[in-house]
Length: 442
Image (cartoon, rainbow, N blue to C red):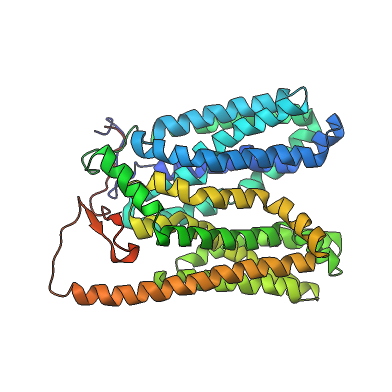
């Protein structure tokens, strides 16, 4: 039952819960992600460590977070988010303190590996699951709000990190960020997140839930959508995170190219605002085909700079849509029961691809000869995702038509049972949105 004084909104989310998650996500992304990106140069100048090794430590943490996310999702389904995300925040604090005190590069690596564990427990993936379980079919609006607010993490924490580093050095900066992370996120996670999920709504045995998760994650649809998102993420993030050398190769100045990189971020905000306006039935083909077109433009346009700016902002807008697609695609197709486990498995390869995207650009440019050739290869990756999306959309359309014919005159009440979903080749799917109101405490 809810604790006295902690009111629930009509849709089951604790009052203030969405605002709390917006604050913790912004703080978590700022301290555990954007701070290091901002501080690479002063760390290298102070320690003599190679910038490639410094960013390598960060990438290693991100790769570990991809693997850890699989286990985090399972724990989240089983125990609820409060202990997991509060503990993740505490691990993040300890990780940043270890980074700040690191006497050598191996300890620095250890700090970022610990930060990767914290990222898996506190950043987007668990937050997406929590919001989807709170809001059920009405999840799109709060997910959009969350990603819009958290999108300002770099706007807040990049200049904050730079200012602190100039004043107290990078070690003092990460110690301060550790305090900020702990003071802000630990109490909010402990206060506003569910201690456990409502068991009455879940139904079934633990073995049945494991079997359902296993069946879904092995299904051709799940694997195909996972491949689609990886191809799309690889094309989008590799091209846009390496847009500065790409545009400089086309004759843009460093300042102009850096400005375009900033506008890619601004485009993400626009994309998240537009996401809900795209009809659900055509989101996959619209987003993937637009992504392919944007990366093609970045590859083939020789200039002028204003056209390259427009192409960069379009690619940023698609990146914004990609984030929300990642947040909704699993729950839209398989419901919110067992969502943590499914979301963790689904997102793991995508998280890994995004982690290696900054290094993949220079590597491909070296192998292919130019950054323009790299962008062309990434356009091909996005185009492959668009072809997969078209195939999924055609199949979904035909199945909906077939399903509506079979369902004529037939009524079902499947709120508490696993049903064969015509979209998943008979794979057990969970259709529980109508009853999944989760109290903050049990």
